Amino acid sequence: MTSIILITGATSGIGAAAARRFVGAGHKVIATGRRQARLDALVAELGEENVHAITLDMRDEAAIHGAVAEIPESFRNVDILLNNAGLARGMEPAQDADLGKWREMIETNVLGLVTITHALLPTLIARRGAIINLSSIAGTYPYRFGNVYGGTKAFVTQFSLNLRCDLQGTGVRVTSIEPGMVETEFTVVRTGGDQQVSDELYRDMDPLTADDIAETIFWVATQPPHVNLNRIEIMPVNQSFAGFAIARN
Ligand code: NDP
Ligand code: 8X3
Image (cartoon, rainbow, N blue to C red):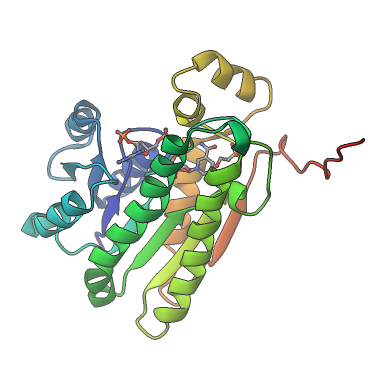
């Protein structure tokens, strides 16, 4: 059966890979993001009968409501919401961080995510659908300079689990996917465009790929209707855990 999946942040990385994975399997995608040219390219690649693009800034609450209200009839019955749009901004300690960047992360990763979830809940309940949220290991494990980014992802994880409680009995499934290092545009965005820092971070460590996560998302979404994956933590083999840090006098 063909499902309709709304993917936030489908212009790059994990969201774009998920769009390709779902359309490749015969499903229909509503693809959102700010970069219209990327969305146009995705529609041209995957076909306008398969992909409906919406140019959307997740920080704009009114635009989210407008976008959801204007989904065309043939894409209206959204079965799966993939809350993927998100970003980290900055690699500084909290005491040196820019408040504007903190605000941008909170507005995108938290407020945008809850706004579109709230707007689509009636449809998802009617469809006995699914919500798949992109959280992160940064929401579970603290690391230096993770400050607000990790805080937003802890929110995403806990919001996912709490949604499960509230949606008990509706048939709606909710999953928090918590990846470690995935080489996408993530670190280029985080550093304000520094490709070199990104290349160095992922150098010689076989990071996860966007396709790895898209495959996980697809697997979650295609479980039988009685199966709910609550949380999935997934890392590259070459990434593991650091110890506690100690400051000496
Ligand atoms: P990318 O930077 O490659 O993609 C991020 C996507 O989010 C883009 O499509 C971008 O679209 C969209 N986005 C960002 N800000 C906004 C906004 N204000 N409005 C609308 N869309 C927005 O990164 P990833 O694919 O890696 O990231 C996807 C998700 O996965 C994020 O939530 C990230 O936190 C999470 N994640 C990533 C990990 C990694 O190591 N890469 C690990 C764990 C989680 P556009 O710029 O066109 O608006
Ligand atoms: C980002 C994961 O490991 O790069 O969400 O901080 S990591």
